[in-house]
Length: 65
Image: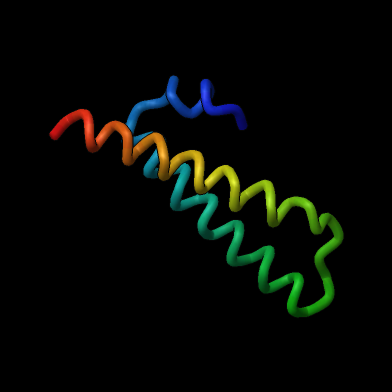
């Protein structure tokens, strides 16, 4: 996911996607603990997507204030 893709979405969509990615990273960590994780790079990718979304939401919040 690119930052431009994140900026194109509304805050509600980003909040919803943030919840989805949070659940996904939890499941990936659980799979890693059980030794069932096949794509280890996915954990890093999801964490970075979460960081991008939080950054954009923070920027929007600061601009609104």
